[in-house]
Length: 149
Image (cartoon, rainbow, N blue to C red; front, side, top):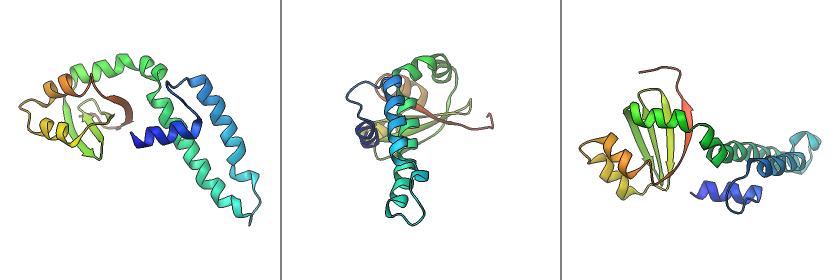
């Protein structure tokens, strides 16, 4: 959740993510911090490279959790969580990453350690996730492996 807040602040996003406004803000930030804008030896060149990477990462991250992106990918997500079992999962901080049999991986934000422990101790991972994870937490598709199980 901290990462979401930081990126929203970077791009000046107040509430819901609007892709059109996000893209406009992204372009302005890239223009301001593009490393090629600074000459070799300029003290701001290194800062520009760091900020440029942060801007690009933030943009891709916010696009992945935007309502428009989620709506466009809803069919695939529904197919995965309905018909593909959980292969593996890991929890770090408030982030739960779940890998599925179809090769998809999704990140769920704000999942507490208490919920994670309940998930680990549940009789049926898929049923627990369908009841306690999928409907309650913000998610994004994080990666897709090339291999299918």
